[in-house]
Image (cartoon, rainbow, N blue to C red; front, side, top):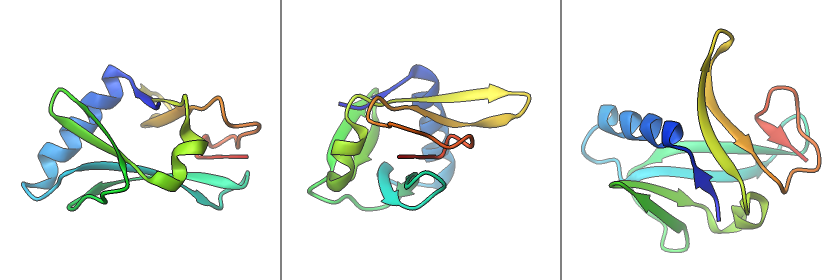
Length: 106
């Protein structure tokens, strides 16, 4: 199962609160592309897909696209704030390689 840190959950909660009442939650998925072969995709969604895995914690809903589950098994999503910038990071044990940007893996 994928895990979101408290910092990631807080960032998702803030994004949902600022997006309006129609947002159901956050969807995470993996697509072909990026520097290393696959890339992480995240976005707020207004409607759910019944085949998505739902992770709900403290009223925040995170949907994992069904086809992405094997690529994300055991992954940890964090939200970091640093001098270089802020954003979500993935610590993914399924990744055999990753790009220096941290947004893609192989």
